[in-house]
Length: 398
Image 1 (cartoon, rainbow, N blue to C red):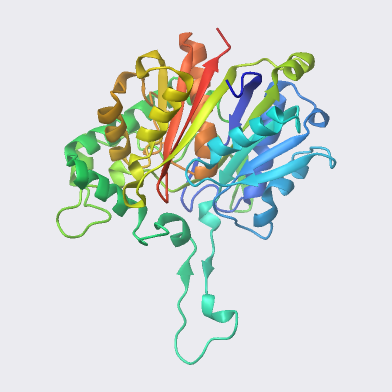
Image 2: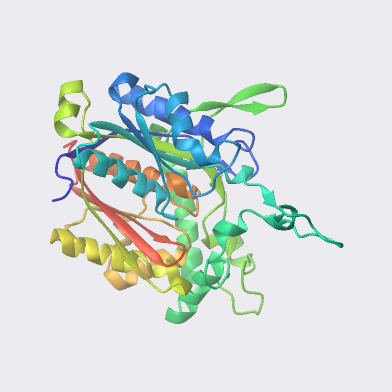
């Protein structure tokens, strides 16, 4: 097993903020440094014991955007001699931060690292391409920087259009997608009311007028939504009367950051870090970009083949709800039971900032395995541009 001596521990994340709301005035580096400090505090680690930070981010924002990994590291108090690395793998960016940190350890370049990541899509700028070399007469076009993220790099379709393509190809019903969306909201409500999700969250103060307030609960969930209301929503991407993908069965645009300690097992024992899970392996597989939501199916299949396990051997799945059709497709193609998938909500209810999503899903899986005494969990997602990613962890808190 490639990562047999790499452990995961002490996850922490911000609450996820709705687009343009509580986190819009908080720089991404501030969010990142906050969760790194929180993760290290939960691990009981001195910052001087950390030699590497890997930070995942798909949308550089603020003046320090291209250097955010180093900015986060030093803002969090890591030694100036420590190293930092920025990574991006579309919607799997948070998971890639974990993998890249583990690879630093596996190759002997690190002993104790922090895998972190986040987004502040509320701070993504608008762009004017014509201004670099001088615009001619007439109007110039301002481009929304989010278009760089939410459009397929090949067809220039919105990601939601690719979800419609997958829906049409396999004739998934609007009603079934709305059922998944409603279930996600109810499971998130349960995760909030039970305190399960609060275990992940490191509250932070956010600006409010001339003062500040504590922000401690995910802002995107719609706990009072009804199944009837979801049925009334109009298709968000196809206006030809044939669309089935709506705002209610799609993930939310949200801001937030998350972090996990990743360490060599021997070093963790020496420093007194309580191992919670072991990273076993991962897989990435390509699919046609126009049906990118199919990605988790070959990625999970490839991962199971690598580790010689079956779906029935896995105790829990976190499959990112980029769109409900992604989950319906994985469920149908692989036979994954809904009863052991996304039990505390997902992208549709909690939101989906790609730099943090894989980290959030991993700590959710870690906590679920610890609570239920299960052994294995798979964390998977589709990736814009046509890929899927999956990671396998083993519970050490049994």
